[in-house]
Length: 488
Ligand code: AMP
Image (cartoon, rainbow, N blue to C red):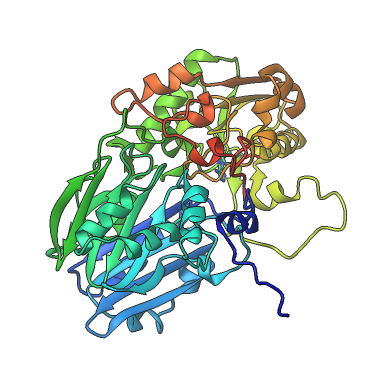
């Protein structure tokens, strides 16, 4: 007799899925969408080039014309993925592009965005910046309903939600899919040559609308508009969904408003480029304001203010302006640093930092220096830098941080390590001071930081305050630990 075959019920499907998928991706990224612009691929390339700081692991562009979608994706920097001979193959006046930061899940090409698929209403290309906080919950439900996932990215769930929507129009399908999402998303979705752009109701991640040669574009940051020669129109509102077709913009609708908007303050602290405007504020001006506040809160007698280049340059200038202590170039940053296969045979303790930074001995010798950094995460960079500065002759090293202690993991798309690895989650400021070997340590207060950029907000300050504005569904349901998604 044939053995009875067991039909897998929902329970066994559930058991087959790991409760915590450590391969999950955290999408700290940059996105672009283009409609009605000649040579859209070239424009998308320029935008991604400007957004390179938002993701260095992989890049992709999908364009559309009558011949259908044209896709080029690959690992590496934008300049490595797209070549002068490959870019012109991406024909059309519609494009979606993406740069990605993290690579959990290994070098799987399926994880590179834009995610592409074909469904009943056309070809989809989707680019996502942010992180869905109900990703595992959605994925589990979709798998139980028969969906087959090709990647470990949370963004793929959105593609499945669009494809399985029972509404008859694409507008309604997009709308329907978005209502299932929780957490952080700035999305650009092309369905054939129609581009949709959406921000989650709390507006965690930026998305900006621009005008270019009779068409329209959406990009993560205004620095991308500058390089494209596009004119800034406005930021998309939290919860706003628009459609771009043949270069024309149609507002679709606003998603039900959240209890409060929560743009990420860490974009201003570290992530965005200082020549961009985020949340209507110049990032450079915001960081200078952080630096000025920091000088008021933690003054010190010193001979020079130096920055950990480049992310802390603006904050260090603010500190110098407020304190009257001269700003000096005490450290240089190697701009072309990438992955290296060279491992020194001994004394590799500071190797990573040495590859990236080098002190200027003439500036430091015998001096009392204030070193300004934008944030302390694990504390490993600073530990190496302090040793390096002392080695170059600095007499006193006073570390000043242009943001409060990072104590909590980010579930909304900033690539942070798990809680356990955050130096400030387990050590007090005094203990960190001792661990880093500095003469003094001062963090900007949470109140001081928020006050310095009071013209926008209220912000998401979860990584500093532990106050999470959007429900952490996957944590609540036990799919993910409160330790956080962790660095990939
Ligand atoms: P560490 O304390 O060694 O983990 O490094 C902190 C430095 O990394 C800060 O000076 C920031 O400039 C930078 N940083 C902060 N957040 C991130 C992030 N999410 N990804 C990469 N670098 C970061």
